[in-house]
Length: 335
Image 1: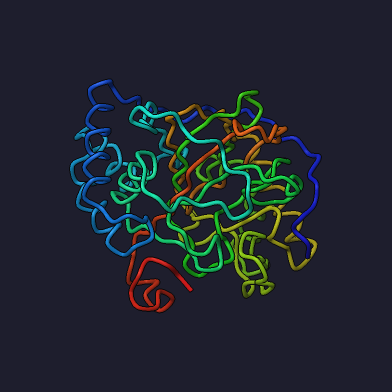
Image 2: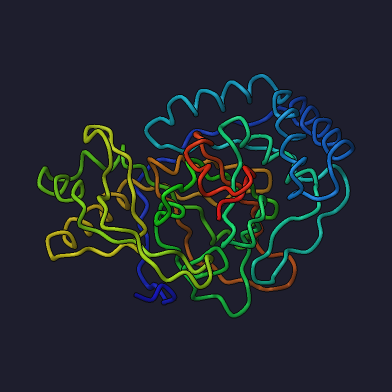
């Protein structure tokens, strides 16, 4: 069941763009001051255990309006299941370094952008990472990598299919935070999101019943390296059928029979019909509720000149106890 393949399908967009919260200049100044305090007080490396302690304390001092928006989103992610914060500072004054272009790129040394995206995600839950994905780094780079253009992963530049992040994992993230550090100069690379809350009314009753049955398998993404196992058979719609969670990766979830395949196809069509696409600008922080929404990316052509699209990605989950069995030593990284 290979995942590395070129997708030629387009993703038609008819949905609305999620509402955005734009930070004021005063709020930006507050965030720069907060990040500066974190950088002065925190450990030298992001993945040291004390880093999250430092950022957790600092996150309580985010601007009050931003705290309220994050808490509101945590309570109910709304019909689109995406929160967009705009005008977040990504640097104090120094110019940004070139966009990384190596496989497995991550952030190790604290900076303004990594401090602020981590602080925001801390208000939604506990920040986590996965040992098998980018060596368990807490702040990961989403950048195009030469030679990985056709990969269905964060390193690729072909159409990235709609997916729930790490859908194969028992303890997948509840939230995925994507902070744009450098935008795609062409504007071709767009973050695509679609919520099951928008798509569900478009599905037939029989399709919903099939999607709610354990008739699907999901394999790990390429970013997890050599893991070749798949999940046990699982449903795609999970929980209260009137407001279900969604568990699917259209590049890695496989139906077990023809009726399941047809239901999965109908679901994808409904998600595309209600999908929105956004060319992230510098300072845009998009937070996706990974239980209710799928996300992907349109294709683009990297230049590999140090100025390509660059996002910081941070995961969070709500129930830290749930994953304790996978977090040896009680740290933030799941084995």
